[in-house]
Image: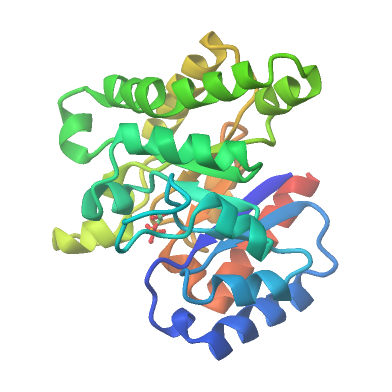
Length: 276
Ligand code: PGA
């Protein structure tokens, strides 16, 4: 089963509650007969609790969480416990825009990840290198650093904490308790535009080895089966090609998920490909 996740970021239209609800309700209806694709939406916090109440099939997640539950943290996003009380069970962690604009480091990724896992929220953890790092041949080093500093310690603590409980241990090892999104920064539309470049997806020739490095690093550390999404300028034109590669379990979309037609188009492609 392929996954199509839409990150609504700070899109102004979709921070309008009425429009956001219409979008989600219409999509629920359109995908009601789909059984082979998992659809997720990460709306802005301003509409998150209301959307969480509207969905049956679509999974609603937050774009970020704060690692603490309480205290003097002006501007912090919701805590993991807040999400639970709203019925939200998914979260993005370490998205490159939170890293670039809001100071999210590997250490903070680790804290957020611990908070999410502790409350049973499924995190989609975003990692990826930038163009300069890629050109210097540092892709493997960057990905390994992000995994080893930001992700593995949090997963290990969680596993240890439940070492008495083998079913929970298996759960954290299993594919469904967390997923990764490989998002090379140079392919993300917002960053490309900032540089005055036309947004362009990464080449499959670059995506495959990067995903290979991620899988190998996790496998070496006792996580042989993980789900990995690709993110960065995916759109209805390239979705079929990207989703046909067995190494890609799904797509994390930004811009293309803001438009109902293109989002649905890509969900349809994923449904068809999963059936093959
Ligand atoms: P994009 O964003 O699809 O607009 O490039 C992807 C992402 O940031 O997850």
